[in-house]
Image 1 (cartoon, rainbow, N blue to C red):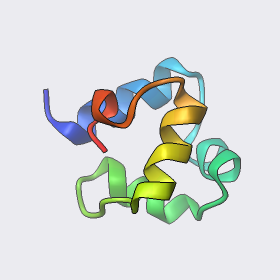
Image 2: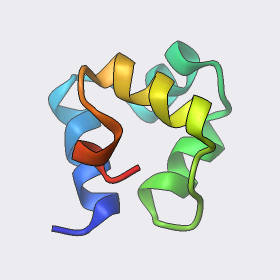
Image 3: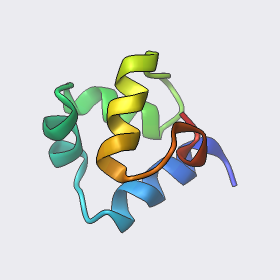
Image 4: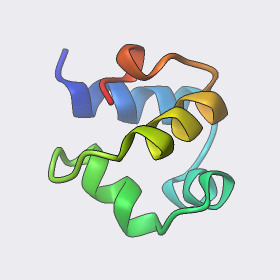
Length: 63
């Protein structure tokens, strides 16, 4: 399974929209969109925040 798909599935399983995830992490929704589409890679701090909100490790969700 590709990284962007794992990320999207984890977000959906957590019941979060891209906007809600972005708000919880403190980033713009456009960054979440770009990560999901494979066009961006978050920095380490942002990846850790995203993983924490999704209750996963960064590697589990492909970031």
